[in-house]
Image (cartoon, rainbow, N blue to C red):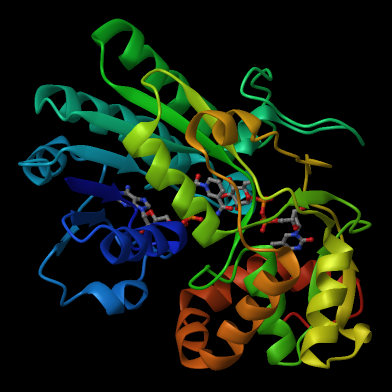
Length: 344
Ligand code: NAD
Ligand code: DAU
């Protein structure tokens, strides 16, 4: 099977491309990625010389480029997206263009090229926020809170409409918070690990008692692999790690693991509209597809921290240039107000 992975040079994409090539000896992968600030060819270094892998640099919102890349493709795993909530709060325009328009462009090109299967890689954030108990099922209402989540919900609805109206063999996965190697250090875990390694403050939003359901990225990749091969057309499949943790506890664990002082923690002004808690009920995916997460959080986070410790050159390169401006815009004033320097 030849799979086209949009967004394959990003965090989950690069892990997924490597996973497919390592576990399916007959498969070919086309990585289709614009290489925005979040895309990085270094993430694909282990497969760049693999004859079963091809890289195309192009935009999912460009119909000509998408159509050209689809020749001979059997399945699309669509994960190209603007993915960071804080950036969507600052400016939502790229989120609408890539996440919404881009998804429709890929759906239309897939229909014209008669691609056999389309998997939309979505997120638990489309369901909004939970109270202290309960978990999202595939039947939960869509109540996105941030512009990012709203753009992903819109894309999911377009996928549903393409299936219903045009008969496209399409399905949707919705996963909770991923962690692991190659994650861009704007997200909580890589940001906090790399700041701690550099002895810089860890900016915790609000009271730090928000809860996320963490899953190791390889467990998510294994789920995507079974969903794209064996999931039922028109269906949605939730994916989650079953590892609910408060942000403050994740931060404390990172500092303890690295032998850094807890005084590096800074409570800063909260994210506007901050979702309080996410939790995923993935029992449908387990029941229908036999998938279950394998990586316990304690082992996965220890290995991940170790990966960032050993791959300093990777994150130091990523945290230079435009990243420094981003960091100052996002954190400078809030950190100074909380009594910490705004450097990173
Ligand atoms: P990421 O930001 O690390 O990577 C996104 C990739 O998409 C980058 O390589 C970027 O260059 C590429 N891209 C962006 N705009 C593009 C465009 N117009 N054309 C082509 N490529 C473009 O994101 P991620 O964390 O790897 O997330 C991947 C997907 O998984 C997203 O769709 C996201 O919504 C979803 N998701 C993420 C998580 C998570 O915890 N990170 C959880 C559930 C679902
Ligand atoms: O749930 C899946 C989603 O998880 C994905 O769809 C998104 O693409 C991904 O970015 C992630 O969204 P979150 O907003 O949950 O992830 P983030 O890493 O940005 O934040 C995790 C939690 O940590 C959240 O409660 C906000 C908090 N946080 C985050 C940052 C970056 C902080 O306290 N400080 C920070 O500096």
